[in-house]
Structure formats: C-alpha cells, structure tokens
Length: 465
Ligand code: ATP
Ligand code: AMO
Image (tube, rainbow, N blue to C red; front, side, top):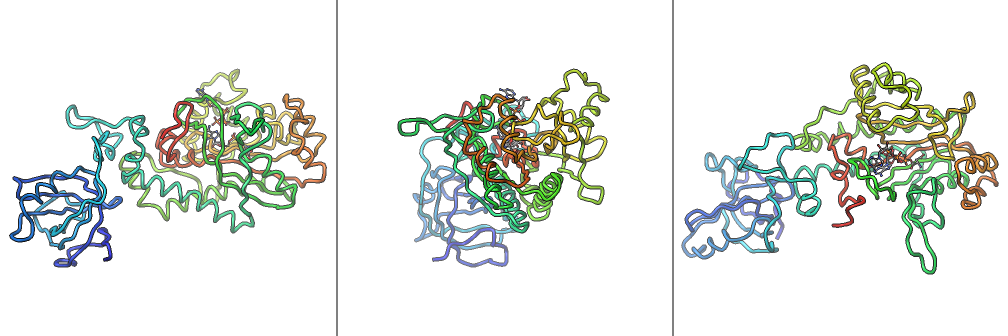
C-alpha cells in the first residue's frame, strides 16, 4: 500500500482513506475513550484521533495507543475529515485523521533528554520561569540524533547541502573539475604545526590540514582549474565558537593568465552566486531557521559598485579611525575583525567584504609577495559578518624561491620534497583559496556557534556522537 505524505493532504481529501507512517509528536488521552495524537513526518504534522468504536476499536486499544511514547514511529490507517472547529493546534489546520488501525513500528526506550517542542523554541524568546527551559547546546550535541529531528535542523542541513551544491555547479560551469586528494599524508604539511599524527603500520602518517599541496600539484600537472570538497583536520586546541578540529573545506586552485585578481574575482563571483542561490531558491529554509535564530538578513553588494575590497592597510586605518591602537594592528585579531565588520556594516551597508594585500609575514610560505612591495603579498581573506570565511593567495611557482621562503619560515624543503620537485618540472602561475563550509553556513544564518552548522561536530572536547 502506498504511504501518504501528510504535507499533500487538505480538506479536499475529506472522506479519503489514508495510510500514514509518522512519529507521535504529542499524545493526549481523554478519559480512556479517545486519544489525540499529533503525527509528524519530518517537519510536517497533522492531528489524528482514535476513539472507541463498536466492533472496531476497544477501550484497551485506545489506552494502548495513549500509552505509546512520544517520538515512537507508528503506522496508521484512517480517514481524512475536515475539522472546522475541533482543534486549533493542528498544523495542517483544517483536517484531522480518524484512526481505524494503528501499529507500532519502532518504539522509544527510556526518557527523552528534552522535548521536541523545547528543542524547536526561539533562541531569543524570553524564558518564562516554570514554562519551559531552553535546551543548552551541549545537551543538544550529546543527544544530536534527536536534536537533528527539529524543523530548524532539517532546514540548516538542507542549506548546508545547498552551499556545496551551488559551489560545485558554479565551478563546473566555469571549467573546473572536482578532485579528491589524499587525507593521509607522509609528512606534516603547510606549517608543520597543528596536524593529527596517526599510526600507519610501522610508522606514522598525518591527517591533511588542507588540500593545499595536492591542489597546487594538480595545477603543475596541467589540470588548469580544480576544486575539492572534503574533510580538513586541524589539531588546534581552539575552544571557540568558530573552530572545529574537523571541518569541510571548499577549496579551489586555478592557473592565472596575467594577474592574481583573476582568482580573487572568481572566488568573489562564486560566493555571490552561493548567496544569491540560497536567497532565491531556499527562502523557506532561511525563514524556518530565522524563527529559531533571529538574524538580520545577510547583506552583500551585488550591484554595479561591486564587492567592497579593502587593502590590509585600509582595514587597519578604519580600525585606527575607530579608536584602536595602531601598535597592536600588525595582525588583526578576532576581536578587531569583528569590530571591522561592524564598522564596514555601518559605513558600507554590507556583511560581506574582502581584505586584500596582507603583510607577507602573516601568510604561509607558499604565498607570492607583492611585486611592488615585497613586505606585502598577493593574498586575501574574505569575511562574512566580520568573521573570516575564506583565505587564499597567489602561490610561488618557482622552486628555488619557494625553498628560500620555506627556510625563512622554518620549514625544511627536504621534508616536502615531492611538493618542491613538482615545481622543478615547470608549473604555471596559479592561485586559489579555501573556505570553511560550516563557517559560511553559521555566518549566513547567524547561528552564533559553528557546532550548529556541523552534523556531528568535532572539537577538542568532543569526538562523540
Ligand atoms: P581563523 O583565523 O579564523 O582561526 P585560521 O586557520 O587562520 O582561521 P588562526 O589564525 O590559527 O586560524 O587563529 C586565528 C584566531 O582564532 C586567533 O586570533 C584567536 O582569536 C582564535 N583562536 C585560536 N585559538 C584559540 C584558542 N585556543 N582560544 C581562543 N581563541 C583562539
Ligand atoms: P586557512 O587555514 O585560513 O587556509 O583555512 C581556510 C578556511 O577554512 C576555515 N577554517 C576553519 N573552519 C572551522 N574550524 C577551523 N578550525 C578552521 N580553520 C579554518 C575558515 C578559513 O578561512 N590552504 C589555505 C587556503 C588556501 O590558501 O587556499 C588554508 O587552509 O573559513
């Protein structure tokens, strides 16, 4: 028999027989004669009732139905009825299901850690003593499977899917191919610090802290334009709202014709296509999340004036103008990044901007210096609501210069021989960038904690569930 999708039901189906598989969201027994069950399929729910009926439904059956735990999965056969005044709480408002048969498909053992209703409440609504309590993030994460059932979480992960999908389709239509680089590495990469070491037969291996080296090698292999969506591991003891020890990297690398601005412009076009795609195709999901996490709508400049691009120096000047001591602005720390985000929002009315031309000293060894001022570099970070979501640069493609820069940063070129040798057989000028998927999702929706944007987040204190 075909199962009914309750979201398709309306008063027009009055009198029709339906066969529904759903969870019991709430249950209310009335005098052992009648039981009201709110039935939920994913994010939709409908009111159903079962009452004593001669020769069909006994008192025992009603009692049993009323004793089923909420969140149990049941199979229900029944008839659709219009319900003009009966219940106001029904979500598919104008109908209810009169149950003729009910089977338990999967029960719930023990007590639920919190109620579905509490898990779905607005994060900004004032808490009323004795009425409900807000479910703490840690409690949610300890019980993540149940927590993930809420409509908000379904919407968040649909949007996560959408970001990956929009990233992929934008790049596919711009001549990129998707690659899959190894996550097991023979040597610590990039900075040497912050990698996880794992046993590897009689020796050790390291979990990749980014696809940086293989994506560059794909360019040395003449792939021209590549991207990857894959896990990135960081062994940093950063217990913050925006650091995970494993996150999803959206990475790309491309050959440059004349100028690194080609890469910066492509990254910018791609991000704006993602923002536009989310806004235009996923308005319902954004609104659903907005009911739990109220946020000012995410704003970016999509018109002819283009994205706001500040040089590092201009960014520092804005902060100094705002009262920050110039002496501490050799680097812009997280706090000042956020402050800059607020300054930019007030002055330019955008939540999205780029900082270009970072001091070379702040960037990894593979970063190309600015030919006009070697204390600066052809590198950029992209920001959403004052927090970094993307980092990238033009890369050095000359093996001797690369080795020299490595030594200057304390990295032994011998330890990354395969990478350096990749440039000895000729590599075109190239550049790219890496984005943290969970950060984009968190900041677009203003979820305030990156763990909410990860299905089963991993941080220094959490490896389960
Ligand atoms: P991001 O800059 O967003 O962290 P990244 O990979 O460039 O990305 P780092 O440059 O290593 O990371 O860290 C930058 C910021 O993260 C620091 O300025 C600091 O504010 C914050 N941070 C890192 N580790 C910790 C920590 N253990 N506790 C608090 N904040 C931290
Ligand atoms: P970077 O280390 O800045 O650059 O990382 C790129 C982007 O990844 C995200 N990110 C994180 N997300 C969650 N948890 C973390 N601990 C974390 N660390 C970083 C951020 C950041 O902007 N190889 C370069 C990229 C390149 O040059 O192509 C790199 O990995 O959104």
